[in-house]
Image (spheres, rainbow, N blue to C red):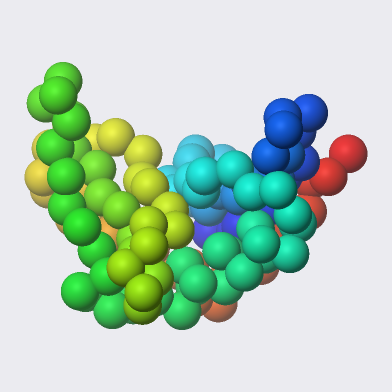
Length: 110
């Protein structure tokens, strides 16, 4: 697992995602105006992803399952990919808990 800090041409150009060993997105953020804010978001996910009460389990309107990771103040800092079953979502959460806290951050600011 690694965190990717990205910059785009958007009005709020900074965002991050956490990708697994196969390069598939597991968690993604909203967009931020400043790089520092996105970096703080990464650190918040790393800190809060080991705490069960920081997860909000959701079902989308199309029947897929996902989750949000919230910070201590209750703000959503990352949203997961969509999963076809509750079991796959649970597996993803366990993977996040095990691998996100100590993962590396790669900047893709090109």
